[in-house]
Image (cartoon, rainbow, N blue to C red; front, side, top):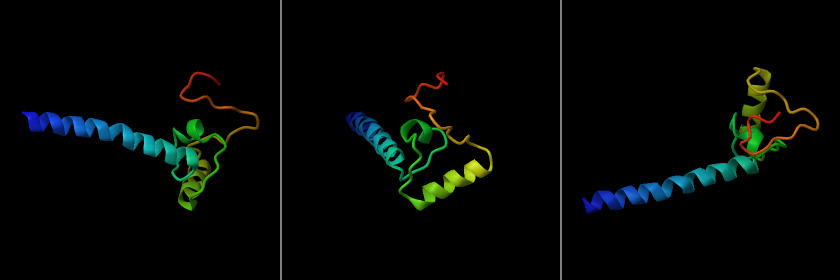
Length: 81
């Protein structure tokens, strides 16, 4: 029982750290995510070529709208636009 509890606590501690690392990668332009990139990296500046290619592919296929000049995104506020 105690081993299961210790294991559960270790897993719970690792999950936010992994999510935080992913958010950092998206905001720095190393990873492209269709939903989070406009929120965390509104300038769409990519460091990784793969992330830029994925963005261009989604843009060409119409999955994402190109940012309009002067358009601002607010962090996790999807109702403002």
